[in-house]
Length: 180
Image (tube, rainbow, N blue to C red; front, side, top):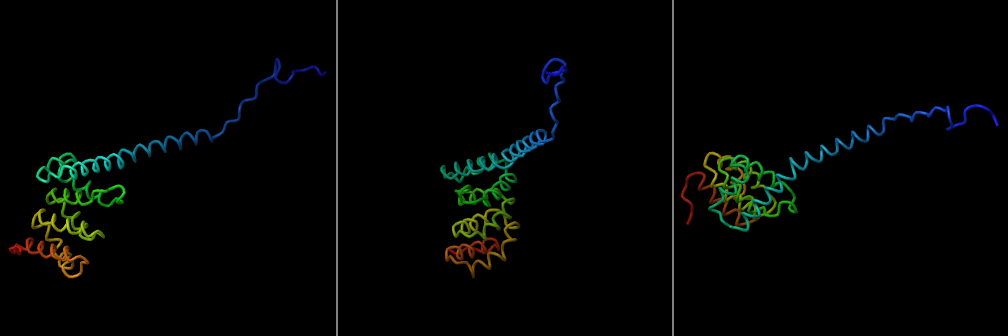
């Protein structure tokens, strides 16, 4: 046996563990991922869930006279119109009650006009029909922006019901007496 320090014995110095950047990188990535998830939940998931809850309650109550209560739950006319427009662009499996969302959007006043004009181009016939009905209620000046689209709808829409409602909406927006 050789005299001298024995590895791991008395007088041996412990080797320092190698320092690496990987653990710090993993912790940083985990913190950033958690922050992004928290932002996504707070900025997207919760508002969509709240909007869906209000629209579903509105759909089940069928109390169209109390629409202002539901609009207030969404933050007032401007905020509700913005949230409902975003909600209507979501897939059907998320935004199930689209007709009621369009109906509620129509009760938001003049802020609803851009969203209703967008819904006039929707693929679903009932959404186009309901948007045409709701557009009349937003005010003449705001509804006038839809006149070219409504004129096109009276001639080219696949649904006769939508064509008829578009013609009625044009009469009301232009100030003509609607047909009885």
